[in-house]
Amino acid sequence: MKILFVASEAYPLVKTGGLGDVLYSLPHALHDRGADIRLVLPGYRALLRQLEQVRILGWLDVRGDAGMVTARILEARHPDFAFPLWLVDCPPLFDRVGNPYVDATGQDWPDNAERFTVFSRVAALLAQDALDLGWQPRVVHTHDWQTGLVAAFLAEQPVRPKTVFTIHNLAYGGHFSHSDFVRLQLPSQWWSPEGAEFHGGFSMLKAGIVYADAITTVSPTYAQEICTPEFGYGLDGLLLSRQYKLHGILNGIDTQIWNPSTDPLLPAHYSMSRIQPGKRRNKQALLERFMPRADDDAMQAPLLGLVGRLVEQKGIDWVLAALPVLLAETDARIVLLGSGQAAYEQKLARLARQHPDRLFVEIGYDESLAHLIEAGADLFLMPSRFEPCGLNQMYSLRYGTPPVVFKTGGLADTVVDADETTLADATATGFVFGSSGVETFLEAIHRGLDLYRQPSKWRRLQQSGMSRSFDWNESAGHYLSLYSI
Ligand code: ADP
Ligand code: GLC
Image 1 (cartoon, rainbow, N blue to C red):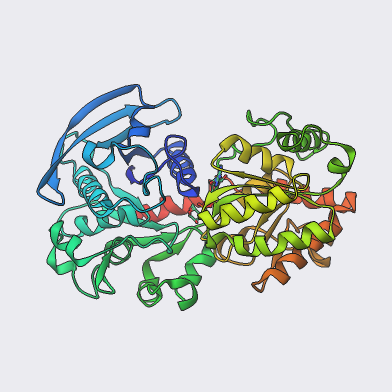
Image 2 (cartoon, rainbow, N blue to C red):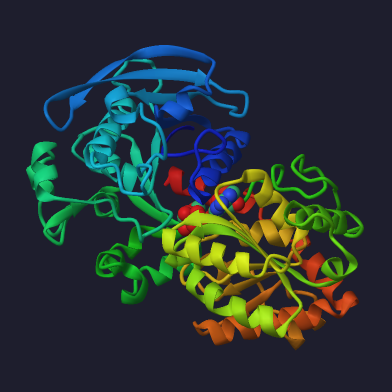
């Protein structure tokens, strides 16, 4: 089956979060099951400079903001990818320094409407084999608002592939103005409440929801949540009316990259049958990133870790409120890695300066430190207010680092709370708090710290998390059956 993937990021070439991880691991899982894949990505400068074997497939002219824009389509083979990559090389839109979506000050690129409209127009043409390559996909699988218009452009065509649109995060809607809509000469019939129009402007995410043949989101619980006002960002009514084509399919993880017994980014390896001393050596290495020597006190004390985007979604305000309590009432050490909203970054950095031997904060993006935190911490904190799926909690389960999570979205679907029953039948994998707020978050952390002091129970908890597979097996099967309908 030929499947065209269209996305704005893919690990390891360009990644800002879990979207990038999934755009690497899902197409590979499908490729392993015999699917013939092409992955279309924007030709960002940072991406193109990592490619060596590139050939030009052709040129496509599409409407941009102020007239026609030419995109060169490149095909690249990259050692990390088992299938060809197709790049939309359009220097005025993508050849610039920095992040795919925002400039150096964190503001959205002012021409994002044009960038992702052109990208989607080109992808829709490639889906119809406009370059006469003799490669006609049966399915086009698009991801998040940046690709929402692909299904809409294809819906205009009498003969076309099936379209599947995956919502990785409903909070990012791709909202643009009416004047963008006009300048980009988008089809006037989309301008209606039944189309892409949204609160006086238009939403690329909404276009994907309306015009795709099937919509998926990345966990069963989130598929239900987004049909409610609390999580729906104004699209809950629409999603409810489209439930017949909405599917919640849990993300898998790449179990080769995220494997504590082989991970090349770790100083020591370990597995479920022998967690210590490997995990301990990772803990020591992690602590010694931040202090000259990890003494006995530091090694004995529980180490809490967090990796993530520092945004409201991730419950960072709860973390900020919990930290002083944890520092005052427990002997825990805490290590945090992330970047995001400047106010969170500054508050965390300030607190860390006040507690240099207890709280370690690294602001930035660091793939290898992320792996070391998953392996070296004792407990992993992920109190997200909402979480479409979440990958970090699955990584931490696999690394024997029980997570503390809020009961929402994919966190609710992947972590089993440790209570008397689940501890007794060895199904417990972490600590789940069910009502929002810092009090309940702290209470769950305290439950974690109590259990940490009971080594045999703790080991069983680690082992039951590590024994969960979280690979793509089941979910890749769900996608293949959806493509085949
Ligand atoms: P989201 O996609 O909402 O950010 P996920 O849990 O699905 O959340 O995925 C986050 C991914 O990004 C994980 O692979 C995580 O390790 C990685 N990540 C997030 N922040 C950082 C960071 N500051 N440094 C390194 N990796 C990070
Ligand atoms: C989004 C979500 C996250 C999910 C990831 C991959 O970034 O915030 O929950 O795991 O996409 O699907």
